[in-house]
Image (cartoon, rainbow, N blue to C red; front, side, top):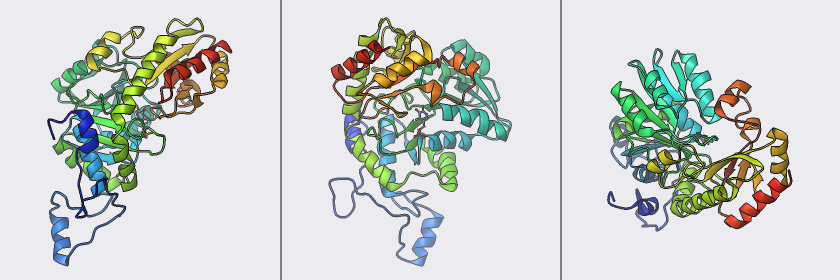
Length: 392
Ligand SMILES: *Cc1c(COP(=O)(O)O)cnc(C)c1O
């Protein structure tokens, strides 16, 4: 299995078959498991062997299949599946931190990640330093001997900043800090967190894994020691484990992950090409596109730029709302990676809570639109965007 290419792993890795030899993965929709005797129950609680289960909050065969498949896909030894991406982010941080610790994080983060760092973790006596993630010198200056965890989004949501992951890993490991990467935007099929040496990759599986706007899920991947040690201990006792039905739909979705992400990434690039230089736009941003200020770094880390791009519409919020309301094919929503193309206005939705000065620092302007490229025809999507820009 280790020599399989990612596309093969996405279809087959981690499969467990019951005594019936089913072709499609079985969903074990059960909270618990029966023991053949009182002695067997005692033995299982004393020493849980591989392929034995006690309670679905601790583990379940369908969920374990999903964890094994994702771990192999991401290039890690093991993984723990969670109820949502945020259960995974907060679980990965809480499992490692204690009062007096120091965390360094990039400032350009998903709104809820910023809340966990600034409002929750900080309440427990953990000091948090936020840096400009695109500035290697800023990481070097902020990471210090007391730093225990370094957190970042490999590609930031929604401004699509790219972090030099190898540099940050080297600086972090020099002081013994663990690197936790929120890998939602990089996509599980093109993730480079493991090859760059990140200790933990956290994925919101709500995004590309489900990819069809149905299921909320998350996953933490890392070494077996970390996953079956502090991560599992924290999550199984605090109740963050994924339910088996979600794991089953995710397993089926993984079969088409490579096809979907490949197509959606090509469409995102085609949209960036078509909109680049449009007179009604200040900027067009897509990581691997020549117009992105960090294009060389993005290309050196990953062969695609993901399924999301961002544009900044001239004329601020009013012009931007005219554009959004004139779209026919794109829906206004706040997910991304869905088969249906979606536009999001971060300043008034996902990042509404941020004070104006923080929005200014992050570049979350009134004109910023996050565009998630779906599985529709790229030409139809481009026509819709151009017509809506004409409406301004
Ligand atoms: C969506 C997202 C999350 C949260 O995931 P949920 O599944 O919605 O809880 C965390 N980080 C990033 C970068 C995301 O895009």
